Image (cartoon, rainbow, N blue to C red):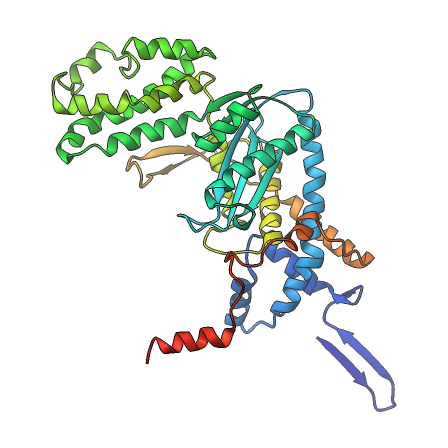
Length: 424
């Protein structure tokens, strides 16, 4: 708000509700930058302001500030942090966990974000965002993201010893043909989940009822076999050949209480068919290093704070929000467990819908968000200096199709006529 004063003697004066930063109101600049830093969207914050009858910046001004100031500031901070991370990983034999994340469920995804995480430290050295228009098929987005990110890591002269992924068929082939010098491991959790899924698909329901009590033991034993292999895939193969792969070691009391399946029963045969599946037994050899990507799954859950799957963003905004998620992850690695007033370690209880069982979870110390203040200061500095340098992903977005459709945009009037004709 600007107020101009004119006194009775002709003296003029003025007052402004907020200072100017190179002719732009500082409050508008900070509000627009803080919206994206918090993971929120303009429409939601604007609606919040409307409810309070709070005067707020307009949509055009918000997106202008985001494009020219906020996104470049985020990209600059991310690049500086990435250089530090790459320097810390130099000279180490890395065990990288990789996984793709689509921006919407089902087969309607516009973006696929492929992320690599160092499984020993939890830091993320690189990610790649692929738009569906860049591929001939949406099923290839994850493969392209995997190849780009791994190439970026290799270009940074990092030594990759092991790559841990899910059982993606195209990535499996790429590892065998293009990266045969690296040890390709499968995530134990994904294979265990696949076994569980196949068991739950047993029909009729009567057989599943008899087999279901064995699911926890079978899944646990997949983890046990992977851990006991200690880097020797032949040991896993020998365990499988001895028909003891799926029989967990039990105490005498546990053996007595266990609901055993008679060997000649239909339930036993149905279960045996699942756990001796050729694909499962073939992939078991890729579990010998006992690798899992649980930390990466946790990161994907946190990423929803910045990139909700139900909302659509343009390419530069999607990259910037993913960069914020990566920085958030890398800054807050190694948080200690919180202690209560009595000095005891803090826990909380939860009952997941998937299992229906109560479990205890650690409560960690609060996250540090000082990096967001640093980015905000960087945005103000850019405005003061008049810096409006586009980022690489902003330049790339200029060459990407604006719409997912491969057909040109039709005439709006024709679409309206077509819409109306359906009701007459």
